Amino acid sequence: MPHSYPYVALQLFARSPELDRQQQLLLNNSLTSYIGTFDPGELCVCAAIQWLQDNSASYFLNRKLEHEPSAHAKPVKNTFLRMWIYSHHIYQQDLRKKILEVGKRLDVTGFCMTGKPGIICVEGFKEHCEEFWHTIRYPNWKHISCKHTESMETEGNGKDLRLFHSFEELLLEAHGDYGLRNDYHMNLGQFLEFLKKHKSEHVFQILFGIESKSSDS
Image (cartoon, rainbow, N blue to C red; front, top):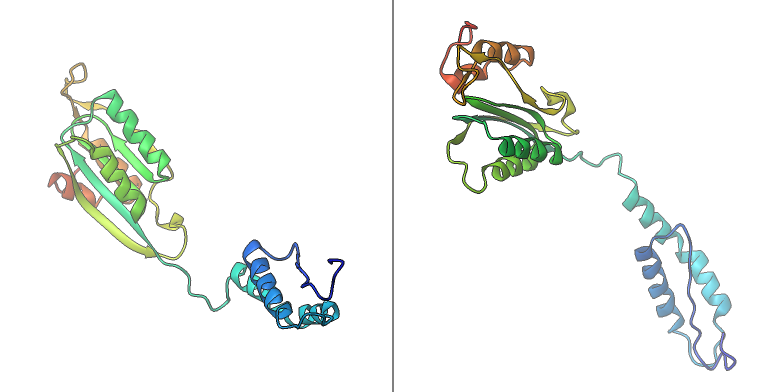
């Protein structure tokens, strides 16, 4: 309070730990505007206190409404996506490392089956899966395509829609006598059994054009 009060305007400031910065700023702007309506020489301290008692409650209420979700608020829907990706082969250690690192960073689940052919399944929120797909292809992975996608709407975190619990590398036995060469074919019979275990055998024919009734490869 300046020595020349009430002939010099007061500078009043209200503060509360229950108000965030934005609400506190709004409250003090309104208080300053109210003090500005008094003429020089007019006492205003008691009036300012009374104004705060009468008007401050609405600022606390606004903060509560901002931070507490309404019981009638509609839940936000997200798109859950599952992508089935086919590659002619996946051999290189640096590429395999990149695929695993990107999958874990984006919090997606699924697997990467290395060898020939190479199969990747990635599932999670749509924006994460699309970023995964863009990242692993860059800059010049040509022999790769997304063969099938499955899209669902969810109001939660999508946990109940996931077929896999993490994103891991899938290593299967090589088919035939090619295990010592860098051109071995993966055992598709084993892969079909893996898909059945995760309730996704329907994609076997989509990926390979082979009926899933038989587990021979």
